[in-house]
Length: 174
Length: 183
Image (tube, rainbow over all chains, first blue to last red; front, side):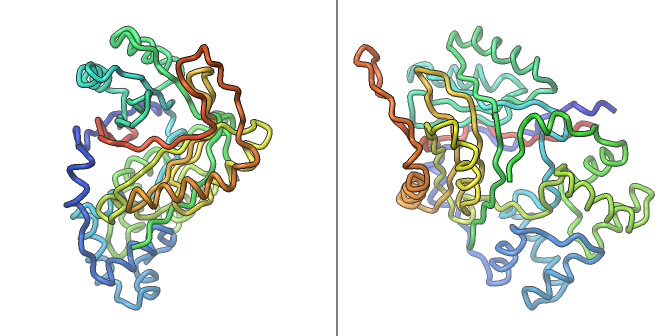
């Protein structure tokens, strides 16, 4: 097995955020809300973790397991389990941006997205209006992809790899 | 607490057992009464060994946390802003740590500047339910950073104005994929 090989899993295509904003929010039961709030902080590492969670939310292990499975199935939870440090998995990453002329935006989107090394790509309201993550097996390959994108799009890539990452404490209460 | 890129590069390579663990769990932990027993069975280990391995990977930062990640949009957090800041390098690490601890920040990084087009070195992604909410969060970060924002002279020969901070909101997802370790 090669430790540094990634494959990309396509999750979705072009989504207009303004269009989807109105209809996406879901109704949640009190148990679902408690579990979402609690499980964002973490699951204990022990033989019966859901039994411990059940105790914390005054429910049963069975109900908790059913509820978490439902939330996962309905994609209210996009992930459930260990979050691995991407760099530990052996890949190289960078954040990059392009200032794309408005009339070329669709074409450049297609050109940039055609690289399988592009993991995420977002349109943002700025002169640099296209922001994407490049994920490769090695640092050298990052440079290579940056150059290939510049050739393909005829635009200069703003390449801003992280110099330092700070631990975060994101919590989205419901 | 912060982790430098340097530390990560020098981190030990994964053992074969760790690779196997990642392959088995990267799409999620089984949501059953005894999830670690299920992993143990597949790895031909005892559950005690799997729990020890899990804790060891957590301590070494290979596993950041074992938790649920909600879909922001479905919970009503439909607005995100990439706040960017031009702050004194001298204080950047200390203040970056403080910004990262804010509960509405999902990512916080120091990145290189590319002058004159890009003068921002600190990036912090904020999430909220309304535009007003993320604007308020930007204000809270500004309050923390106000003493160390870089004041640059605007050169009238340039056709753009250099600001000390900005917030880029996303207007469309153009591509989104998940990263996975390959078998």
